[in-house]
Length: 449
Image (cartoon, rainbow, N blue to C red; front, side, top):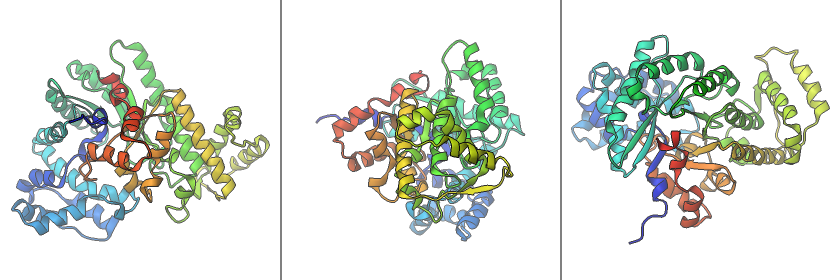
């Protein structure tokens, strides 16, 4: 029996969040004994706000733990995120909060280690032999001790899970709204805990993307690069979710964010659907999609176009220097919170396609890697069909590419299923896809150190 040509891709997971690992069965196992003690308010309130339905998690969990099939179906319906739920990150977080409430309870009663271990074991049982887990602390840095304790527990359990034939690493997520302050705290922790430092291989930016442009992380990146240059040993890497959910801006600005994150020094970029989703499809996903953005975003886009004018024009993108300069002067007289409107005709859509090619080429030149997560993008990115998925555009380009599951529990789709889906929808043969993807371990933080 021949081996699977895609085995290397199926056994190396580079994009997964601990909180999104838990299946319905996992939640029943973890929450069942505590159904009436868990504070479900974060789930109940967010679910009611997002879906206008008041869920009954304690009753479902209690009955499901006793084997009630109807209760198990209710948990599945109100937890697993599908395309029918829509491209709405608030809705996703509402469902995700069922797991968050469970995990927070275990953290409070000092049994959170069991939750981490279950997520790690789940990957080992799938046959994955290298995995990088990410997680965001449930509290902010206003409580630095608790903030670090959360990351410390994750790193310690993940380090202890390593064994011959299985390696796990940890990537703490840094809040986009406090990047430098959070980084300083985590960096000091790594300095104080050298035994765990080898298990922590980078930092991740995730959660809500809208409202947090890459330029707000410049001070963080400057400090990070300075620190890395002054230290010996394995280098840490930056992983950055970008171009994933971006309805608050123009398509040009969304693509620019991807490029700017790479220019700042991010090694791997999560999702980048803005670079692979055809613009005709993108603007049709929601009513008035991408038609409004802040004045500050438009000014940033003008500055970007003028800075890269020669390269953009070489790529077939039109840059009218006089018109852009005049527009920028007019915009500077407006309040930063003011908005500008965009309209999309066929000429502009074609220019956007050329911009996509341009940014993909720039990412290739700076050795940035795109992490594409098929099910996550279909459901949160509102990709209308398999043929429209950005992964196909990425496969046709020269950009470095890895496939990940993102949140395999809440999406009910483990890594192997994600890769099989790509194999079944691409025009490439299995062997061609395997050659195109290669071994994703070469893109691991510290090259899998």
